[in-house]
Length: 305
Image (cartoon, rainbow, N blue to C red; front, side, top):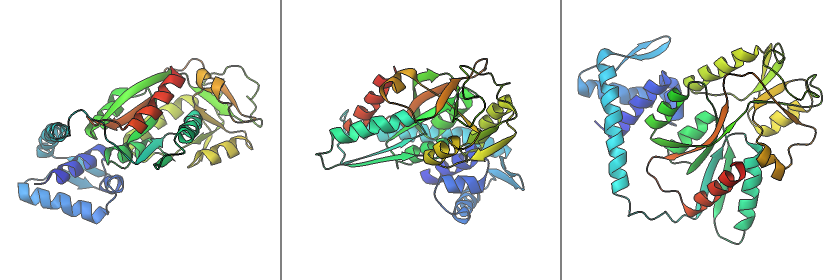
């Protein structure tokens, strides 16, 4: 039995799908299935029941996953103890993954300019929540900046913890409808979910089953008549400026008093919702942030607080 096999079992359990878990782990479905099968043969017990709908835990599997979480927590603790004291890592690169937050891009530009004379690779990628969490958990990004809904908060906090991540809240934000001049609600000073019903909503896709379920719960509150799916912020802004569709997001007044928002775009607060958004960050549990990551994060925190 290997630690990596335990991590793979936990990922299959979290996603409920061999295929989706394989994507998150950046391995082929056949390789993941073989790894799980080999572990089950070694244990002499089945961990998962496979069906057309996905995979579910057996009775043994439920106990196995519970102990697996404890084991992986201990492994993370041992890794922290093996670190070289409380010193922060010295790095010649910084990899940051950010949800689709316009102000963060502006802060990043200032950060890059302040280090323009240094030999450091700076990598800033805008990604979905699923990709951010997986990349930070797998060590492909040092820091992840997220916009998270308050819906099912305990569930997504548990998902992050299971991935070996620490989440820290930075600010709580009111939902806003982001729209362009073609939207009928453009001149509104405030809106309600009922006023936004039966309209086109622009969304970013999520691959994680939990996030997909949360999104569906939120969308249901607004009763959109259809969806327009985009994969990056440039497409979002272009479509908003040319259609009647709107996007459900945030608008931190302090942040955008420093940085102008997109020309022609408006962010209208939505009243009467039973949820809010959080802006927060994730990092690997017990891992010290590099000086560069800490500096960028401090700039974000100062801007929003």
